[in-house]
Image (tube, rainbow, N blue to C red):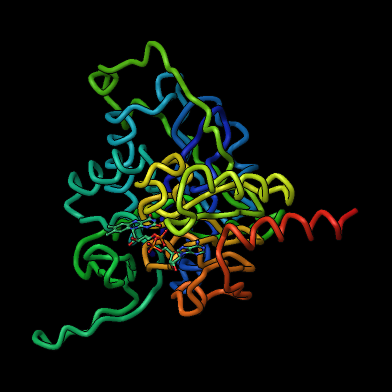
Length: 339
Ligand SMILES: Cc1cc2nc3c(=O)[nH]c(=O)nc-3n(C[C@H](O)[C@H](O)[C@H](O)COP(=O)(O)OP(=O)(O)OC[C@H]3O[C@@H](n4cnc5c(N)ncnc54)[C@H](O)[C@@H]3O)c2cc1C
């Protein structure tokens, strides 16, 4: 049986969240297909990877451990996946739409002639009928993503070539352990059979890593502002509210474009995807490109002076009024009630 594979991104021996999210999704797709889920770990000092990934329902973990394989460089990781996929013939291969996945995915898919859908927001299994050829394809991977500037949601299929490859951005899928004691098999590979010395032509001499200034993806509360906030100065109201209720500040692309806040705080299709417990949208109209990045929030409160703002249709609570008027009251009453 051709299985489903997930490439795991690893930094300092820790599997990236996006990979754990893909393992969660991969497990449920593999259950639907009745196949195994296999994970690939490439790097150095990978002894603890099994412990990290097996609880997500990994049946087989392929380990490629060598000092030269970390940090990531394009050629050796590509060679390993191309050879491994050539041998194992997965039906599906998933990776994060990160800077690594965006470099690695197209290299692997073009070497295998398989095609790839980038930045999927949903993955499902389904059939496809090719009416002209009178042919039905069973159990294809539906690779779902916004297209044409977010105006349509496209379902892309790859009926004939394998593996069906897709990348997914961090935060789009949920991360969930299936069984803390899930038993998988670990296969340690001899890397000399997969990589040539020429693949190591690039060596990393020095790395400068800048830590993100915000923790917007991990914050349980987000106070987000849009163009309706009106100015950079008015955004201080959002920072004040976030400080009082223990949240982070984010915003729409229109707010970022207007210079009200930094790009790393942008939420949406071309920003980050978040799923906090509470999302307070202030002066945000709720265009599809913004909603794509926050609709999975548990509770949404909209503060907008237009009672018919589109975001109100997905909000759990709507406060009709201006940001300048409503936010100081929210701060005041929250402080009063938590004294
Ligand atoms: C390819 C592509 C990718 C995109 N990616 C993203 C993305 O990642 N994230 C994103 O957000 N957008 C993205 N956009 C842009 C998106 O289409 C919208 O233009 C943007 O989300 C609108 O931002 P906004 O809601 O802040 O502004 P507007 O649409 O201008 O809405 C402002 C809102 O504020 C309200 N308002 C005005 N004054 C006040 C006040 N004083 N108090 C309270 N409410 C007030 C108004 O009623 C209105 O609802 C993308 C667009 C494209 C084409």
